[in-house]
Length: 403
Image (cartoon, rainbow, N blue to C red; front, side, top):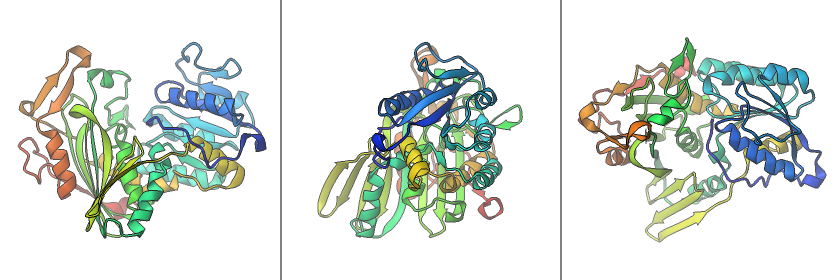
């Protein structure tokens, strides 16, 4: 799964210096359609050639180049198409682990959409397999390719906003009933005993969590000291749609992620850096950075490196991966905290209003916009803020035992 990005690819070598990489795509629907468009761009530039795709559901007419073979599954594809350079997996969350392991049994590099896998145990298995294979594994947190992250690193080093005291991630989107009807796994914590963990922080707004962690310098499991979760749901689903995740890094920095897909309207999500002498706000879907200090306010837009091109440059020239598997360890601790937490607490129907009709109707939690802002600003959960519908309490996750 993922979020569409701008394609910049400045890290890759010129097309004239490269033999086109032989690529296979597993999963052509959903976010897989973005990869199809991106691969079409890269193929036109002479950087890749799409050899084959695999999906149990046939691709839409015209979506796959005639030169690419179509297979129903990865085993058929790997048996028919040798010598691949890159395999991209863009499939439902619960299929990531087996498909990624199959890909790592080849000589190809692996691009795996976010979240990497649905449990910390599978993450450790995948890290072991990747280490044995020696292949690069890129995780599809496209926001980490933003050039704004380097600018943020510099402003922190320069003390532009003073001492960094905390980070918050705020996301408020709208998702209607149709969103949860689009697939069997949507909104599920598990299916037939297999973990799915399709919640607000692990799928639609996972980039908010991953980006906040990256800015805080929390990449691996060792970089996280504690995780607390407070999970709620307004929709009739298994997973959470409105939650606060409170993280403390090994360096002691608080990160609070306040997220919902039950807002009155969708707003671009953002990461706020709370400094002793100012603030910086990063709207990661727009690559837009706003800085406010006593000296005034500045705003700047940045470019972005394409993660597929970065992975190809890694294979060809040893360029460091932008979003490596190992560096998603901190995010996986958050996912595991959510996976092992009690069932999300249902929000009182009196605090929910429905807008729209039929499958286009979406839930709106009363006062959620203000609640998200306060949670991020005060590093507090909904129950700690005393919200009338917040009947749960924060659940601490045992990082030492799991990490």
